Image (cartoon, rainbow, N blue to C red; front, side, top):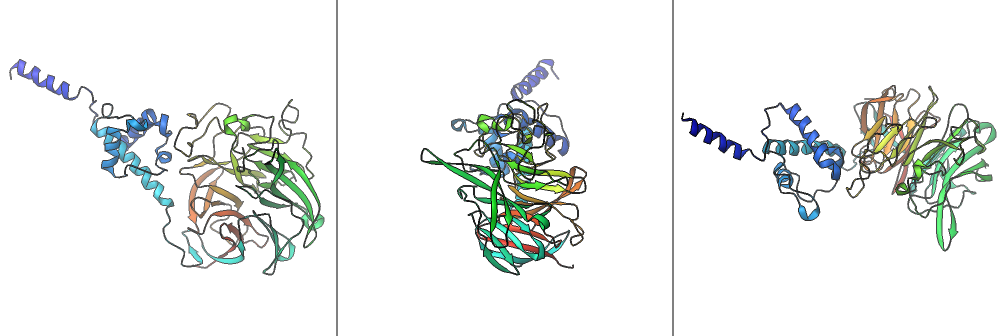
Length: 471
């Protein structure tokens, strides 16, 4: 072949490839890894560093492979998305579309479209039947189990109920609450020695008037159980400062085996001020107090000038689940992140859990909250949920009624309306299972004295006992 003709052919190839690299032939695993790298490198600034988070939104321009490829190539300059046709070659664009399609398919596992037709739920692990304990409620947030089979439960609207042999009645003496937004009458916890001293604790949104507006905070009330009423009521913990916002109260309480009470307080939506990172306030923290509200002198910041002495751990967003792993005397929590940032943690003494400096989630409008998912001196979650499941309530399964669940964590999903089972291998989750699909916005889950699991769902409010069914 004439060398000039050969040169001309090479020149044409050069022109064809001028603005696009030629990607060597790779297998699917390598191509998906390269697509993930491209997403993190070029897309994460606006969409977060994880495709699983990015797809958890409404898609306005189509979710087919061809439409995603077209959107990547053409962009939407008027909306701030550049066109990427000159950066990626055809194979890279197609691989990026396939990467997002895999994330979309993963997201579909939470789309439970079937309506409930039975009160029996068959799972790979256990089959259970729902036994209705209470109905006609608004939003039941917490439940406690008294001797002789008596149930006590809190409705967010401010009503406290007792249930004796299926007969439900109001309990007098509950605190006045701000039942707006996420506020109201929330969790219930019994004193470890309740059978002797009859002490119980209620968490609630305490409020005050300021310049014609209601300001509120998370508070813990200690009271004496008198059968059909509460007596000797006293607030033993009031989170400071009060805020005008009406969400992210936290609210969960749990005693450890040594008699200390742990309390979660959310950030009250104040992440822009980084209040969870500051020790001079109670917001975005897990607190540790004694049963009378006094503060243990071995708390991590007890002697730190300017710090709130009750703080145990900090950098939390909105922990709405807390449970004691009794065998190890370990307190576990989960918390709501932003979109894609829900977490399971063990809050340890003096440690910083990162919010809002680090997060695996993005803002609800799709914008970036923080570019950081890790930072020295800040803890990583033991489990994170993508997409966010909206966790609420939490318990460890004990006893022998549910052999396949024994030792596992159960927690509610508000967003996807199911009960989530987390099987642990030490501190790691090696299996998760979606239970009770479509049961409703599941607010709390508790182990009863009788060894049964109880769950509460919202709007309309029901409380169910899970009765095992032999397969």
